[in-house]
Amino acid sequence: MASPESSAAGGVAVIGSGLIGRSWAMLFAAGGIPVRLYDVDPRQVTGALDNIRKEMTLLAQSGSLKGALSAEEQLSLIGGCSDIREAVEGAMHIQECVPEDLELKQQLFAQLDGIMDDDVVLSSSSSCLLPSKLFAGLAHRKQCLVAHPVNPPYHVPLVELVPHPETAPATVDRTHALMRKIGQSPVRIMKEIDGFALNRLQYAVISEAWRLVEEGVVSPGDLDLVMSEGLGMRYAFIGPLETMHLNAEGMLSYCDRYSEGMKRVLKTFGPIPEFSGATAEKVHQAMCVKVPDDPAHLAARREWRDRCLMRLAKLKSQVQPQ
Ligand code: NAI
Image (tube, rainbow, N blue to C red):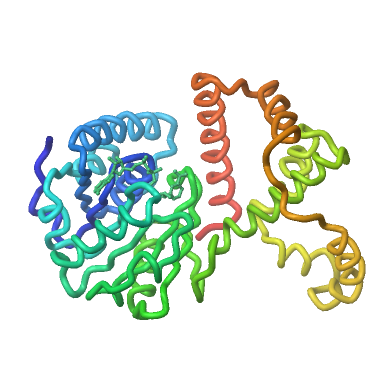
């Protein structure tokens, strides 16, 4: 395994080199930032470095590599590391990417708390664990927050920054600036809440989708078209609030015209679905007609999705220069 270079000082330590750790390593390198990639299982780091090399080569060939540096230059910024102390030494940012298990993350943070500097940011990739639980009791808790990426992070730029009540404002500001520097789109969640913002919106959509199928209002295939051919067409460019603003003569005009109708419809929404039983079976069968659930078909469809996202990202950069 490549040992970390001394030039990694002032860079980022990525802890956990699975799916998300690899993506973060590629994103930081795209921003010209040295990365030390550490994993409790050294074979994971070796596999991650191989995987990153392959990915970057393919991205460069298709003209979709991020950043101003070549693939080789970016690869030279990423070093594997088998010692956590070496990984974090001199780093300005630590991005934790270990499995979504509160106890495991708490143990790791207790270990990091003992070896981290007073000016490094400790950031968790957690999808849904509350930062006040993750970082409780740490001496360096003011330097801690969640920076939740969206899968696949290389192609979907959003990062939710979630502080806990004791996170220092400077910690959020610094992480926000770092995310902008590497080309991601950070949003500030002002107070922690279960599911943050993205998953709360996602679960609201999934719930109503499920109820509509369960009640026989629409087939699973057509339900997905409502999003991909309808709402999703504009949501890649404008959010639901701006949609309201544009769909009338401004927001207040929209509320005037449509609030009664929205409230009437919202009152008909049903209870939280069970996501099991006959409806689960029905939705599963419908999905498998389109994409059989064996690993090869799922992987092929994910690759197709990623290629679509890359083309969408290019389009967005043309119509919305950052
Ligand atoms: P993964 O299972 O692919 O990778 C986890 C890695 O952490 C493995 O390589 C494992 O060997 C390593 N690991 C386990 N214990 C460790 C320790 N104590 N120290 C160092 N490394 C350790 O998991 P994945 O999918 O990359 O998820 C990581 C985090 O990112 C989770 O918190 C997850 O919720 C979050 N996340 C995941 C998304 C996804 O779609 N997979 C999306 C957004 C966030």
